[in-house]
Length: 457
Ligand SMILES: Nc1nc2c(ncn2[C@@H]2O[C@H](COP(=O)(O)OP(=O)(O)O)[C@@H](O)[C@H]2O)c(=O)[nH]1
Ligand SMILES: [Mg+2]
Picture (cartoon, rainbow, N blue to C red):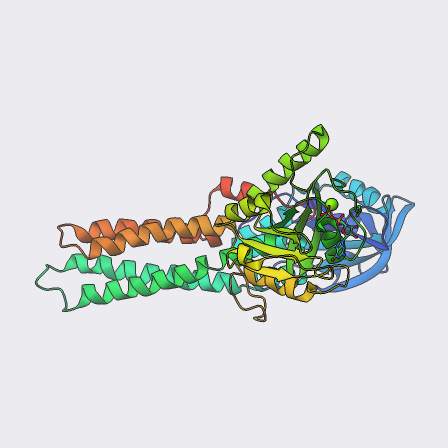
């Protein structure tokens, strides 16, 4: 087991007014420090059985710092696998800070960001995928994102990566074993069989890579930009989906001049909805800047909603815009169907469109399902949340797949020293999978991952 000589401590709850704050101590000196700072009815904390709690006071000599409850967790049955003590004190800004200061004076050092989780990883309590899941849970923007992260913390994704890793190792070992044979002595059909196994591993790799789209949506949220001519109802749509009057709505064209971004969740997917300045030729400098921002947002959007007013004919400007939407993840919303309908839908070129009247609250459910369907690219909405890979995992998987593909290609060739080449490719492929779960790691990788955590996690 990885051992750290020093004992770390931090406030693990958020600062600000609250009922309770928690200070955590982890490391070999945790119980010694607890005995120093915490006074309770005998026995003292270090003599108490594991996984019990005791009421008492944090005392600096004769002075009471706070009334508190102390939890005892003995190595290896704790989050870090080290001796851990947690003190639950009063919330707010002062008590936890005073207690932490006293703990630091008594021999602990302030934990670095993510250091508790890093120790859990280094001590083999969790793998890297699970450590990252802790961060995903903290950052989750929707129930679905949180459920997916929890699945990951419980090891579902790790298990899939472990199977890939083990399978690749086995095929690699079997390929290396063929080195002991001369070509004539090789058991019949062995190369064909190994090739088949590699193809099946590649299928599993592809399956894992395919979970990235959803992973990206759940972790980062999808940017949805609403654009269109002034006065078509863009701000009304933002307000209606949010359920509050966020943007100013007015019959005066050019009311919204800046982009307004708000978070909301639809069907468990976090969205960043952006209302924009209406697209038109304007001589006003402020409005022009707003329109430039609209265009920039459309460029980086995961989805683009282009709004049209049903009571006005489709003019040349709209037609030009619709043409530009050819390759985008886009959706046309025809609003104000409560007014006379002047729209010639033939001009929409069979593009996906939804008719709605925000005034009469019509078409909203259809719009929500349409957004979800587009974002999930036909994936079923009702399937329960499952762990999904992140950008980091995807990059490593793509690298691993590249090496695997080369290995498969080489096996199909009739070439001298083929086994050595294939083996080296496979080793590379395996290494990349190992970097995902942390079976293989470098300090830099850990630094990269854990520096994104907050202190206390
Ligand atoms: N009749 C009708 N008016 C609407 C509808 N949606 C929005 N409006 C009105 O259209 C005007 C412009 O709306 P707004 O959301 O500010 O448009 P934006 O410039 O595209 O942001 C406001 O007076 C809204 O009340 C609708 O479905 N029907
Ligand atoms: Mg507006």
